[in-house]
Amino acid sequence: MFVLVRKVCNKLKVHLAINEINILYLKINKPDFYQTKRSNFGLISLIESDLYASWRQALTRNNTMTTKSRCFKIAEEKFKEIQNHFPELKMIINYDDEHVDLSMDIPKQDGVDFEINLNLQNEDELHLATAYIWCQFFSADSEELVDKFYQSVIGLINGEYRILQFVNGDKVYKTLLQKLNGLDWETIYTGYERWRMPWTKVEKNVIQNRTESKLIRTYKASS
Image 1 (cartoon, rainbow, N blue to C red):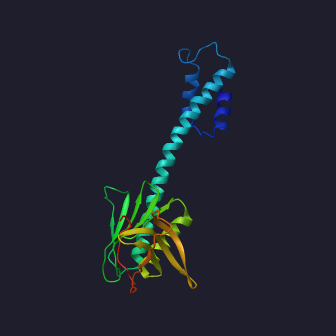
Image 2 (image 1 turned 180 degrees about the vertical axis):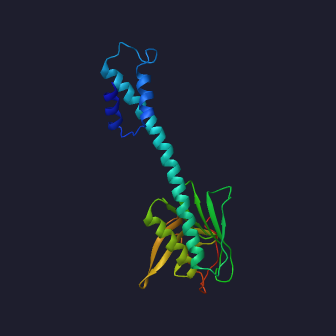
Image 3 (image 1 turned 135 degrees about the vertical axis):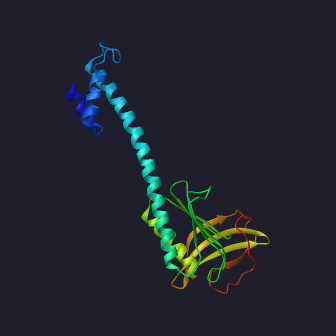
């Protein structure tokens, strides 16, 4: 029986300590826990089911904690890298934000024409938010998306990226985050989009830091 338990554990890739195996062995042989009339096959199936359920629960808890702590560390490191990239700018990391896991505020100041908020929420979502666009980069477990988030923040601050809005009257119909690629602007993120009639005319509203933007008017993306 002990050998059979070992085989089940190996099949499930569960690495049990010797004491835990001994306890399991005793548990199996307790007549009040398992019916003595069960066949070896049925008994082992039940053991496998119990072990698998316990293993899955432990694995889920461990993965959740690992993902949360790993993404928090990634976000914290990136926020500090952004601070170090612009040491002349005021940036405030908030570890006690009641709405998100971690945030950093970059207030309007010399060198920053509009407020920027960076945050980590729902354990693994990186967000770049302004009054004109809100970008979500999911998941913070993805090295590619974390780099995209980082480059977007750097580009937005140094003016290499821009926010392009399509507006009509007091309504925003589309908002894009773009970077210059050669002579053309490449869209990095579509942050807001409202359905419009084909005949509805829109104008472009450009928001670009450290540049004398040709603003039509300033609208919030939630308008």
